Length: 222
Image 1 (cartoon, rainbow, N blue to C red):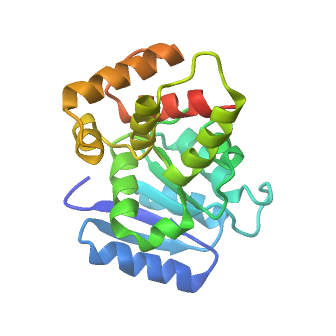
Image 2: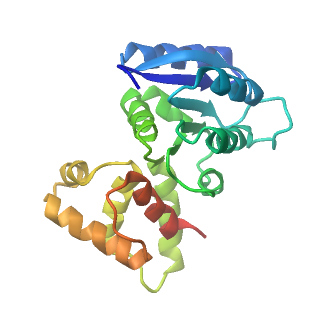
C-alpha cells in the first residue's frame, strides 16, 4: 500500500466531504485520491484509481440504488469487483438492520461506523487500518443497543457479563492485548474469554479480526 493508505471518499454533502478529507490527510496516514458525491461516481473512481479503502456515507442520491442503502449497495458492488478494497460505511443509523445488511455476504474488509465517529480521528483511522488489512469493525454503539435487546430475550446459553465485555471490545476490532489493557485483564484471561465466546457461538477459534466481528454478529443476529 505504500507509505499511506489510498482512499476514495464518498458523501453527497460537499462540506462533509472536504472536512473529512482534510481530517484524514492531516493524520499523515491516509491520502484521499479523490472525493465523489454519489454511488455511481464512487464505482467509477474505484475502477479508475484502485484505492486501498473506500469511506462512504450510507445514503447518496441518484442511480438505480435502493433508497437509503446506496452506500451499502455500492459497498457490495465494490467488494464483488475489487475484493481487495476495504470499505468503511458511515451511517446515522444505529439500528442493527443496516449493519447486518452490510455484513450479509461476509465481514472481511468491511466496517460500519456511526457518523459521529468522523469527529474521533483515532476511531476512524482505526477502522480504515482494519479494513485495509482485511479486518472488520462494527460500531460499539450498535453493539451496545443490540446486547441490551439480546439480554432481554434471555437466550438459554447466554454469555457471561465478562464475555459480553470482551465481545464489545472485539466489536472495536481490538486485539487480545488491546482488550486486556481496556478491561484491565491479563492477556491469558482475554484469550480464555475469546475461546469461550467462539465455543458458545459455534465458531472456529481464529485470531482474524473479521472472525471476531462474525462472532459479534452471530450473537446479535435476530
